[in-house]
Image (cartoon, rainbow over all chains, first blue to last red; front, side):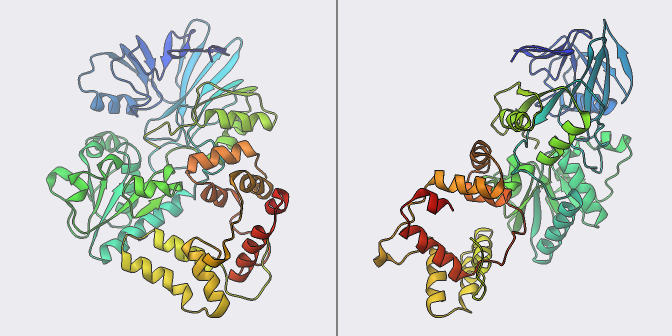
Length: 333
Length: 137
């Protein structure tokens, strides 16, 4: 679907804000990009100029060390005036530094959620829900089968599972994405007194978390040596069948993701345990966000875009899908 | 279908199957499947064994449920309140219609729990029914 969504121009190349002259989360290098957060599926390499929160910029630089573009750091709520429109970043609750993008002009307002989550987490500022005339929302988990247990309950299950595994003389291996869930899991386990060994992809981001006030006193990098009895190993899911995990002779593996709602993810990730632990809004949170923002029109993208738009339409809310959807969109889910 | 009262709960078989699925060890799988059978006897034991094997009927019966995806999806729509398109999309997302239905229905269903005998009787009534509407109900 192309055309104007209030102040956003949905083009085949992505979402453009004409009044600001910037693309939002463009998948290809752009002259000016506003990044909602630093996950790779939203923060492509090679932009000329990047606008984002300070934390997102810091992570972007760590993940793109060869990047030579210019950066503009925007604090939450800091307004930037353009040609007939203003833009501000607001918390999205997804990961450290993640933001929603709100644009306002004489014709109204529009809110782009990026990836978001309404319930509190340890490291992300909870999502804001400002009123907007048009809402562009992610729908990674836009089906009613995706209703997650409360985060605190999942953390308690993670801690219990690790303790049981350690008591059995095995190493708990936690499969969690390097940016976001790895740090959330490490903090939960630290609070429970369980030391962690972090994969390098997660470890190298800790300075950004440290600068934001989060400390990991019981964590060490995998480079310093493999996990020893009593420690939990936290690695990205794509390490499940690599020597990093396979060389842990006595282990039990848990998969942390919203996709852990699917029993099939057990075999897909060679996991013993499944914990639906996500940095995304589940179905109920997606619906609640639509209700809170109260837009006149909703546009859905990522994940189950068509299905969620259809469900909204069935409830009398004007909605349409920007993307085909229907697939598992985000690796970081 | 709701429970009728006495008899060992079908839930014990469902939990045994989930427990077996969640472990890698063959001996542990055997233990988990055997556990609910240990307290059963007679026709209830026979029914439970068949249900755990995945075939609700004895081989000599040569019976089938003749319940296909469409009938099951319509029954799920009636129970969950979701439309067929959402049921189908959910099944594809989860990778299994049964698992998707389990995620869509309320955690604690109304009425007394189903016993093994209830489930056995229900499946037998399906094989004896020819009409899709009867099967769906």
